[in-house]
Image 1 (cartoon, one colour):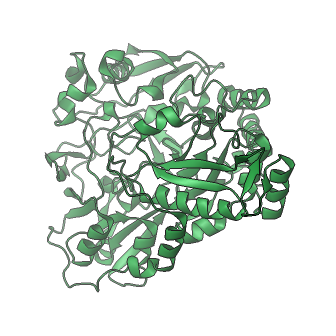
Image 2 (cartoon, rainbow, N blue to C red):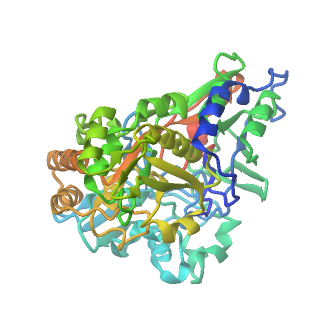
Image 3 (tube, rainbow, N blue to C red):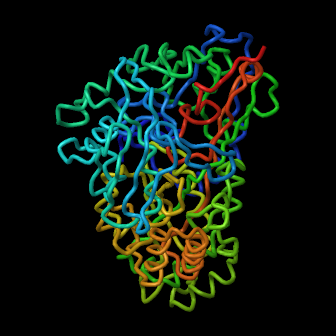
Amino acid sequence: MTTRIFDKGHPHLVRRLPRITPLAFLASMLLVTAGCAVSPPQSGTGSQPDDSLALLTAALPETLNPLAGFDNNGTGKINESLFTLEGPQNQLPAIVPLLAAAQPEISADAKEWKVTLRTGIFFSDGTPFDAKDVVASYQSIMDPASASPIAGVLTNLAGVRATDDHTVEFTLHEPQVSFKTALLIGVAPSESLERTGLVEDSVLNRAPIGTGPYVLDSFTPSRLVLKANPSFRDGEVDLKRVVYEEATDDNSRAQRMLAGEFDGTVLPPRLAASFAGNSDFELVRATSADWRGLSLPAEHPLTSDPTVRLALNLGVDRQALVDGVLAGAGRPASTFVPAAYGNAFEPSAVFAYDTKRAGQLLDQSGWVLGDDAMRSKDGVPARFTLMYNPGDTLRRDLSLAFSAQMKQLGILVSVQSATFDQAEPRIGTDALMLGGGDTPYDVDTQLYKMLHSEYPAAGSYYDNPSHFADPGMDAALDLGRTTLDPEARDKAYRQVQSLYVNEPSMVVLAFADHSYVQRSSTAKAWTGTGTLLEPHDHGTAWGPWVKPGQWARNQ
């Protein structure tokens, strides 16, 4: 959980932050405009050549190996995938062929997937791309000896084989219509994967070889430079260089953007909003399926009560959190499914903000108010601890704001920083502020691990952390995962959301849209590709720069 795959808007760091009380947080919110203010813009248009893009990033990758998760989700600049993403920013993008020649042929039981590959494609080292490369890439990830951090994506993959030079067959243990999202993983040449071993020791970590529009120019602890692939199949791209320079501090990135050093950066929503109205910059907000919410521990006397869980969901003002903590860059969320999922989204599955009803439910469960305006039951105070990753200011601020709202209900929520390693042994007794939507390009990937009863035993501790179990929920999730009937899938997932709001396992708060700042001169000089619906992992590998190889210079 602490590995940085690529630039995230909120990289997972392990430094410990001081504990902040909800009262102090509310006071800081009143001063937030002054705290986020940035200096007046300076003159300058950057020092990069006209055919280069300079981006200031919150974090550089630790590896450039796609088999370790670098720049995946179908958007690889160096290593391309069988499929890629296309679509408007506020809708679920289509998963369309890239290295594949056509859509996969899926068996009636959704367990056999046949993919035909394009011909005439070469890796940057001159070797031809064929089925052996796909097989070797997927087998390397599956191999326990490689310890690939993305092996969990392929747990349902029983085997992969080449039936000829340009056809690959995937066999699944169980039917899974959403397996198509696993075909967004970058492909590496088989010649570089002949020796087995830890993926962290692979030569591809520092010297990647791919079929994409870019190749590696240089890579240091503070700077990553990509240059145009001169042998790219569609010809050398217009944007010749993309420079990513690391600056972990949010305010530092904002100041350096104003100084004219860079063409773009990623910023927290409140700081990004300070650029609005400045004609030298454009503020870009990318719609995401990146949710934030807190687990409710199954072994805690308060949060283990289903009626209390419902009360907590009714007693939180999600719109206030979006307006305040997210500065409007997001949408309230009651479930894990945003409206971008179209017919799979159930619009009635929402929690109305109703503190009166929440109080009644708490009373009904025996958690009654005392003279100090705080609740207790049989002498046990209504209180629990909420942990957040110490390197993530958004999770911290959401935790503190949630704590302040719960106090109005008579529930004391103590906010405490904890790394993911520290949080794991406490997940049964303490709540944890989580984020999700790692590969959100099928509704199954948003829901199955968070609500199916086979988790967390079948996955990680943060999958279904509240140990929710309901046979009706499992049946709907299984139907949605296995049926090839689109209408039946949509109906199953709408049922999942309806079941969830009747008996919630967590408190989902918001979908946090991602904020980017780009120089207006850059936007005028180039015709870009816009943004896509974004996953949890984001940053300057996403935003308006998600597909720089498709940028075209304006005349």
